[in-house]
Image 1 (cartoon, rainbow, N blue to C red):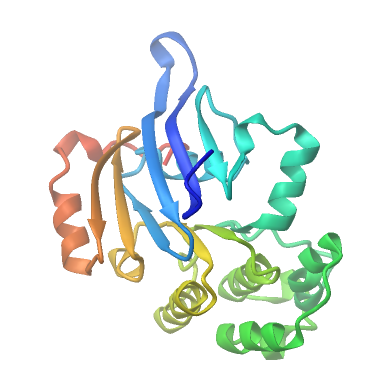
Image 2 (cartoon, one colour):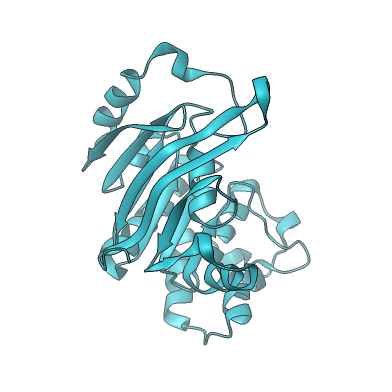
Length: 254
C-alpha cells in the first residue's frame, strides 16, 4: 500500500508510442509522489512527456509498465467500470480543449458531475466558484455562445464542482487573458491551501508554475529536476539547464 499521506503515487511509469524505428518513448521510468493537499506543476519542452504523464496518472491512457496509486487505490489494476467510477467520484479534469457538452448551458455543464455522481449541490461552493471565475452572467449561455476563454472557465468550474480528491489540469490558463488566468491560478491555489485538495497541473508558463508547491521538470520522458517552493526565476533557470536537443519538435507526447 502507498503511504497514507500520498494522494497520488507513480512508480516506474513507462509508455511508448509506435514501434521499430518509429518508436517514441513518452515516459521512460518516471517516479513521483504527491502529498494530500499539495500543488504539483509539471513542465518541460514539447515532446517531453508532460501530457502523457498526466493522462496515465488520471487513468485516461494505459501504461506499458508501472503503477499509479490514487488515495491508496492502484488504478492500473482496476477494471473498466471501477476505473470509470474512480474518475467520476475522486478525480477532476481540466482539459485544454474544454470538452463541454454543446447542447447544455454553462450552468448545466458545471453541475453535470454532481448529477452523474448523484451528489447534493453545495450552493455556497457553486456561488464561490462562479464568482471567482467571473462567469455568473454566462450561466444560461451554451458553449457556442461563449468565447474560448469563457468556455475554459466553465470547464474549470465543472472540474472542481465535486471538490475531488485530485484535480488534473492541462494548461488551465492557456486560453485566458492575464487577468482571468491569474484568477484561475488563485482559485487552484485556494483549493489546495484552503480546502486541502490536490492539484497536478501541466503548464508551459513559469508564472503558472510558480503558484505550485513543487515543479517537476521532464525531458525525453524522464525526470530531470524538481523545484520546491518555485519562483518564476527558478523555473526559467531549470528549463535553461536542459540540453539544446531537449527542445525537440512539437509532438502528441508533450
